[in-house]
Image (cartoon, rainbow, N blue to C red):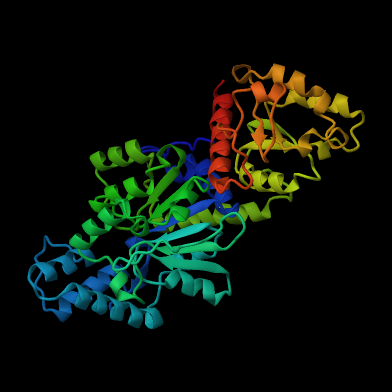
Length: 459
């Protein structure tokens, strides 16, 4: 479903005018299909004066005091700026700075008081959390409640492509530190020079230096992205997002919520991120957003059992051999459930009278038919839809709100009426299962259906 545009500044209160946005995000979070990006403004702790301050700024202030730097009023006390300034003035080296920052975070990990908003976020059901600060507070919070997770990080000094995680089979949340971790100081990306070299590495030709394909490919499956606590005037954010989203620009739904008091992105910056990535900017700050998200998330828990996650915009009939091809069906339906659609299988015909009459009624009712093809699909004893295949193929007319999209699950010599359809997925007729590209083929199929359903809603 296309997300409703958030009201610009000066319009109605977006907290009320866009309740549907909060509800939709809450549903996607609860379904475990959201990627959370944590910016510096999302990892906040109390300083000595009792103020809530981003921990990266506290680290920068620590370095300023240690090296007795004098900053003018127009110089920002940010970690990247201070670290770069120390290097320009030859007051420290890369290795020493990385060790200093590592020690600072090691001390803070055991004593700092975190803003409760981070704990509130961790208690929700995100699929991937991308942390852009050196800390491990997210995993600490998971440890406190004995919640399962898989953590990893990018090592700037010694990149590796050894990140292995099966998003299909492993339900754990993935926590990935994008710029390294304080526990391995050599991994940290601190100065502007580090940032430039980092971008060169992750976009370069060396496979082992790029961000793991397993991670970036997952963005195709988990398309709703939340950016919390980012300063979009930070110059390297444009390059970073361009790299992260190189293959999924048109397939994501990103939202930005800044930390309270953060400078607002100017109009030029907003136009860039809206045009390039479809980023939605909101007047609501991070703290208010999380409160509203929790409210809607809790409301979902209080809804009657079986309440639809989102109003269906299409009805889809899935035809398959329910005994032999259950594995393929289970794999596909896990992704299809993220679509605003109602799904039916032959199992729903139980107790509905004559099977052929039920099938014809469903063909008149549904806008999409998905035959899941394998050798077993054509077993007459276990697929009562076989006598209607020629009719189903003949009725295929997507422009008239009837799409037949056969999905080639397993290898077979495909002929007959379905073989002539140009809507077969995968388009190259490579079987999905056992292809080593299962995730890619399924995400492309689901994305095609998503766009088709969106168009149905407009007609």
